[in-house]
Length: 337
Image 1 (cartoon, rainbow, N blue to C red):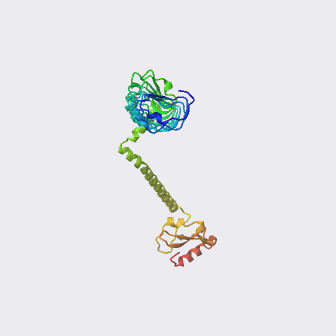
Image 2: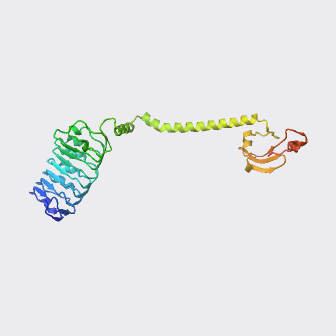
Image 3: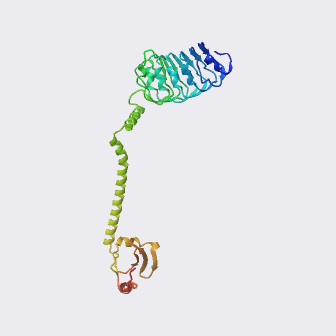
């Protein structure tokens, strides 16, 4: 009780064999609780509204006759010790408004005599343990203002006829709000953006889809892996065909063109398309009145000289030496021309 007591909690007080009640609420106690406790007769331990820090000692699980545990409004951190829930006579637990983290221990199902449970305003994560629904004597449950996730167990509304208060507000629950019990007010679930009141809500549909995908058939998994590879192969094949069609179209245009023709002065196996690829500005090695000379390298490594002659269709004196150029080239015998 409030007496403006300060300092740390005396270690020896938890080793008194006949102490039944320790009530030091609303004081200025600080420090940490001892790690060893052997007060077998202790039934009530309330230290709420102080400045006690550190982790909640596992040794509380040694207080076999404990009925009430209240450590609210302190500075406790760490996880909730699972040993607390092996106390078969424990009726009330209030550890709200601290800095506790981790998940709610699954061992809560062993504490069948619990009637009051308040874990609100902490940093608890994970889902509500399924074992919570096995605490048949529970009357009030407050898990509000934590970071709990997952769906609310369907069995929650059917825990017991004695359940009068259930507060799960301001968490990160998904799925649907239980509909079957009149005492479950909508305010008990507010602050959970992904919760809704019917089975067709988006969060539940998405959750079912994720569950279905997580346990999908091997065939679906194979399709997920192979599908992108097949698409990539089809794209490569399409690009190859487009290039092929482009080259064929280009060759046909060249063959149909009446503006020029290819003359080979030696028996060389040359590809017309490969020769045309060499007719680039950077390959020019000479120019004359009759045309331009290009240097070309065939895929086989053969070096050739290609001369592009510009003639006249009128013949006679106006061919600017075109005929003489053809005659001269025809007489040259060189492996690179």
